[in-house]
Length: 114
Image (cartoon, rainbow, N blue to C red; front, side):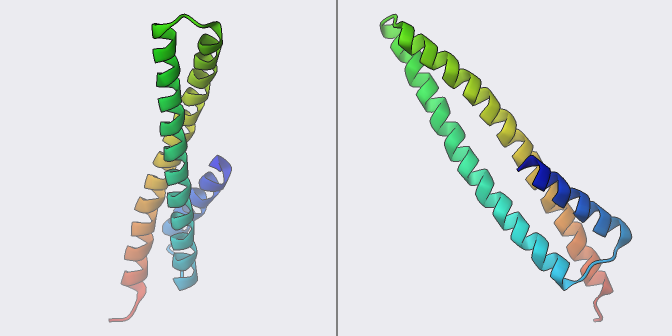
């Protein structure tokens, strides 16, 4: 996912820099933005779910010391860290794509006859 997002950002930056874009490019990036928006929502839901499960396992450890809950909590904490890192990269990349898309729209509007 990160590679795909990076490629799309690089392509958008190149199109903005060269100001060589058409309606198909705008439609393509609009579709990719929708895809990344959906991906971001799914990862947010998964991150919140893993975080809640981790908190529940911590509560279980607090109530009764259980080695299995301790191991579960450790695994969920590691998973949560990776989910947060992935979601952070996905969120920032998508926000950058939004800004680049705005620039692409400005360029397309300046090129279109009035």
